[in-house]
Length: 137
Image (cartoon, rainbow, N blue to C red; front, side, top):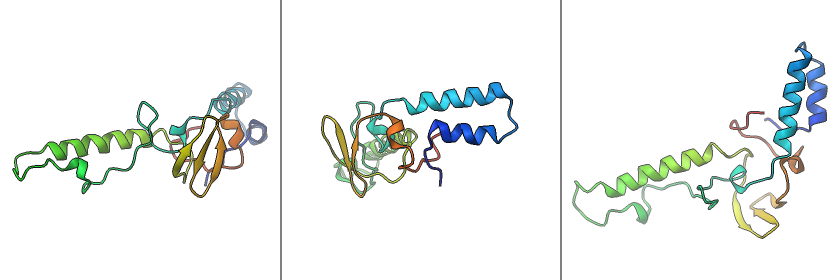
């Protein structure tokens, strides 16, 4: 389990290593820049390019039914493949584990089992969230 840590905690960890000071400085600066980024919904749950929450595609969903009994009509399968690809690309942007979107207001998001999160910066989540493998900090 990888937790989001503060820059101070990172600096303490870095000073215990044998890394050159320029490399330590670079890692610390990159971490600080990361923490000051504004939060986006796509960091919590898969979203499309417009910020709409994506549901995991289900091959049995009506939207993928071509509507014909013609076995050569693969438009439903093509839609499903495109939808799966879009969902997988969106999953790569998710940085925080275990969130299920419920709704949003101008200033907050509501997640099932996690409650309300203010639309602030990543720094606001230090010590609270678990990071996904996508988060390369």
